[in-house]
Image (cartoon, rainbow, N blue to C red; front, side, top):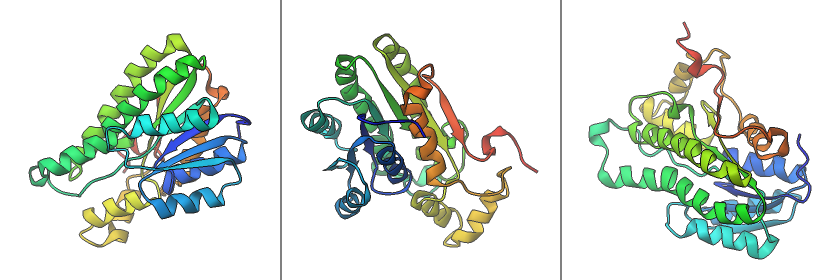
Length: 257
């Protein structure tokens, strides 16, 4: 595990799943943490379990002012930001593309795409002033593949990967690296929600159908994704930027018989 002693790490969507796993690894590596989530009780519980200096910001990343709020809070408390993990996201309802409302589509885009753009935009000035930094964005295998019944989610993750590539080019001259992880299928509440929708309530049937297409024949864990995020955030990945790392058991490699 990389040494993050003295590093300040911002994590959105930090109260559960991949975000919480990343927070645990960062804390164990010696980082100071600012954790962002919309679930107040879960966020407080997360902070209480971590053996690290932490600051919690309860906020909805879909709100336009949230990124500036958590960046300002981190600077006020810690003085700088070294690593940011823009992990918050939602799947939305499982439905045919013609059954998705405008409100639902806009909500998914606000949380999954606008929050990443606004986060990067708010982080760039403080990371420039700090001589550089690392931003890790949680995309999805859905950012490189299509899938039925979750079209807005798929579109949002394709957009996120585009933001990562463009911002990596812009940030390089300032020592700011931007990379993405693209996980799926991972044992999280979000994947359970998708399986429930795809399986018409039979979550296990949908789960097994998904596993049948994964060469490694299992779901991944939040910790496995978090390990890649910590690596990309650290100096161990100093020559890596603009990349998307698939953590999907081989799902995107091709058709598995």
